[in-house]
Amino acid sequence: MDLRIKNNIREFRRGLNDVAQRQIPFALSLAINDVLNEIRKNWEKRLRRAIDRPTPFTLRAFSVRRASKRTLTGTVFAKAIQGEYLKHLEDGGDRRPARRAILVPVGQRLNKYGNMPRGAVGRTLNSQKVFSGKPKGHRRAGIWQRNKRNGSLKLLIHYADRARYAPRLKLVMGAAKTATARMPSAMLKAMRKAVGSAR
Image (cartoon, rainbow, N blue to C red; front, side):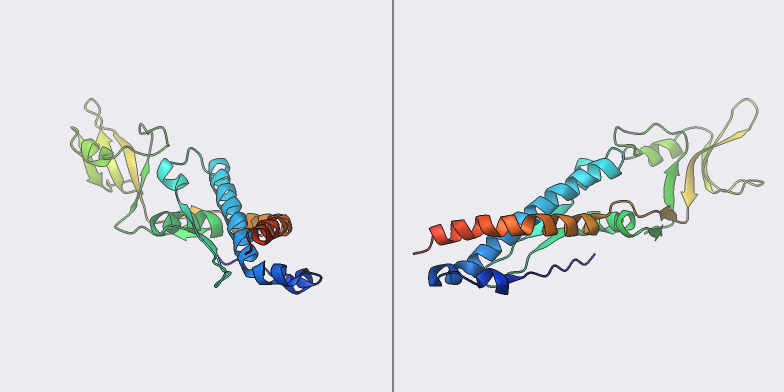
């Protein structure tokens, strides 16, 4: 994800006195950080709207790398682990499994976040008449349970070789809108604070 925002700081400089001119880098860093924090909050709200019951871990995905008056550059970013799966919801496309397969529960009890509880696969495999594989005459591999009475099979967990996602987060688009709308007022507020603190 890459977001670039242009500014018209040359126009802003016109008509400022010497004190205000010297405080511009400090004011810009304050304004940038203010907008970055608002983008982060909006991204967290977007996760709640776009994802069904996101986990607390997912909601802690975003962090801000703050701007300073020397760099005048800041970033809102997803942490490494969360970013690995959130990028598929932002960009769309296929996700391949890190190991052998993606485990897809079929009629299994899920936790309040819509996921299989930790250790559920191991407990399922330890149950009677449960096995892992691809039964003869069936197209899907996974974890199956055999009915004790009639020997019929029931798929409990499907082994998928990929998961397909449609882009639905639209984080970059939202960030651009927030920055465009909020940066002018954030800069004016920051400029007043910077000039007021000047020595």
